[in-house]
Image (tube, rainbow, N blue to C red; front, side, top):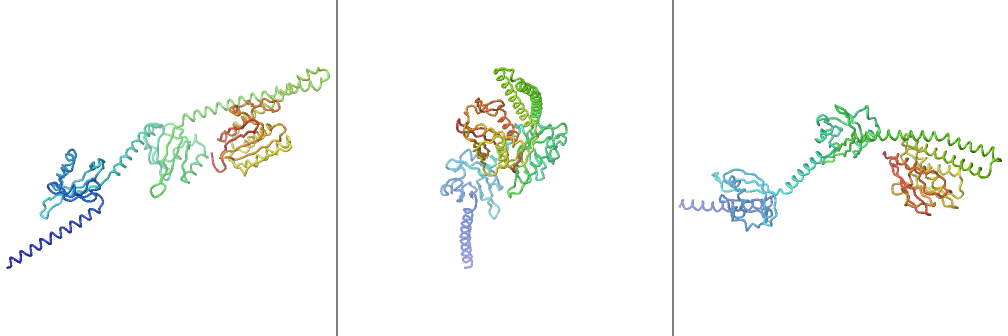
Length: 500
């Protein structure tokens, strides 16, 4: 009787254990289906006993087609040969981790990170393994893209004639590309920890304004370009141009600058040679122009004396010829004065301050009206236009443009001139006789005049002076016109509040 009761109790216990295992299996299956990645349980005969919802998504196959089949049956032969060793190790009791390329049912490929965990009985016998497979395709592709980007950058850096650098928040260099050693002949470690202030050659470089502008850009965490200075090296020096952009971490905190450096030593040498040649040429032109003044005045003076003192003894033809000599002498004197003015524009030191161009243009117009009144003449200007430049040179620029506009007014029509600011550039517009744009290329060249009409005097220097002044201010000048409908001389200058 007792043995019968014991048998019933053991049977009941087995049924309870079976129910518990089923419930536990269902709970674990629900957890596996909800977890990230794919879960596959394989028994010791390599037969698939469990295939999670995540596995269905990863492999692209339904659970019903996978459960009950062996791993060999559902795996391509070449893939099984490649990965069967991992399965064998897991069934031998080892924890196995590896990466693999998985071809899905639709033919697409994914990168998978696999982890095989042995499943043991209470006695320690391996009954199978639980495989956890995570799709890491995005990570693998991102890493590959990053490696490609790094390789590409390294190739560019090696091939470039520049070098690349990175500095910390205090401006100290913390990294430089290999090309710095090829260009400077100095090891990268020599530069590390130094700032541009440590590297500049104080004897050669004295452009304090450029250093001030760079410091302002750094304080504002702004990019800067073309910052030039003379780099002092252990042996010799180089002229370089730096460009940098601020760098920030993921939280937005400033981390320093990254940038490029270009060796501009040859450019600086050519610039200095060009400046020397221009100074020599300007000095020669000034000397020639100055020396021409005396003969021109002498010819003009003697011709005038003959006309005044010997007028009665001279025939009419002699009077005509002498008057032509006086006029030619006066023209030559004006031409010499214009050449000297052009030379002064090139040599004069540039002073940059904020200039109210509207007020300056009004003063110039009033002076022109005092010298040569023109009844009905009109001058208009837009709202205040303030630029950064040399007030003396800008006055000369406006005087040449306004005098030119007045001179080429239509016959019998009072001159009408306007100073405008249009689309980021300035414009002096008139309603005069205009000109054919076919000849516009000659307009700003010395001694080139577009109008041969003797009613319009001039020597072809005024607009050449305008171009020289604009270029010295870092701008450009051009013209638009139409015969009989006026002309517009347009030019650019640096706006107030911005340093060139």
